[in-house]
Amino acid sequence: MSRPTIYDVAREAGVAASTVSRAYARPGRVNADTAQRIFEAAEKLGYRTATALSRQPRSGTVQNAIALVVADVTNPFYGDIIKGAYEAAREAGYQLILSHTNESPKVERQTIEQELAQVDGVVIASSRMTDSALRMVAKQKAVVLLNRIIPEANCVLNDAERGIRRAAEHLASLGHDKITYVAGPETSWSDGVRWRALRQAAADLGLEARRLGPYEPTVLAGLGAALHVAETDATAVQAYNDQLAIGIVKGLSRLGMVVPEQVSVVGFDNIIFDELVEPQLTTIASPLYRMGFTGVQNCIAVAQGAKPSGRPLVLPVRLVVRRSTAQRRRNKTSPARGTTRVSGSAANDATSIVAGSR
Image (cartoon, rainbow, N blue to C red; front, side, top):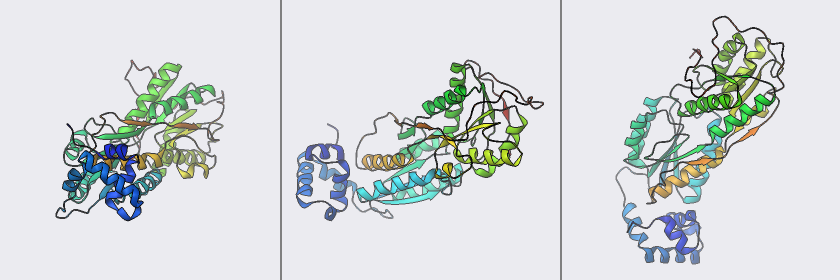
């Protein structure tokens, strides 16, 4: 028989798993009658003994702590993820240790190795590490990955394929027959998913899909990418993320091109700045707060003995249409010399890649 988990206790006591966690971590925050019912359920199932063993003091360990590792703490994409993660940790009576790795796989690995001995589990948002490196971490502690999949870890991600398809359908309905994808970092797992999704959607809709990049996921990189977009005959752009999209909009404006009259631009994430820029950015909205909250909640559960399901949890996304997309104008300019057009057919893996400045 497998060892009872926090979820078994919660079911027996008729409460939420987070309430069970609080009863053990911070008994004063749980009603006395509820806490007694939880402890009785745990005693009946044999959970308390397993938990007590797991909570014995360990040298150098911060009791009841989860590490949250993000690629770039200055990227507004992570703001709601961090807020959700902190709330989940607070509800469960856990500390959250936040680290940022500056988009570097090497720094990410070093940071995690330093923190493993101090925490009960690690939540890694948009990891830049290799699969093999992540597997090594998952063998040592409870690990939850956000926007990444490996079978050995609990994974939470957004439905990027559906989001990209909705954006492609939106652009096609506006008369655009070619979509230029402005790519994110080479080491980004999500970037590969989004590009493949766009190629498949383009093939299904009879469109052409082209790729520029890779680029860093920043507004500054988007300003540079705008020059390459302007050199093509692009009328529609799907950017890897909102920061790149905002930079492209600003860069095209500096070059004398008007968004969306000449080029429609779509982002990905729905960060707070999308409604502050002009024109307001059409984007694919990810449930970022829920992702952070669920990631930490699941990590605590695994650290307390729950077995990972083995299947990623896919959160729904939605297309938010604002003013950066519009009906395609037919009096477009000719393609820039040297630009290669590529069919979006899924059967044809050929891609047109114009190297972006890094």
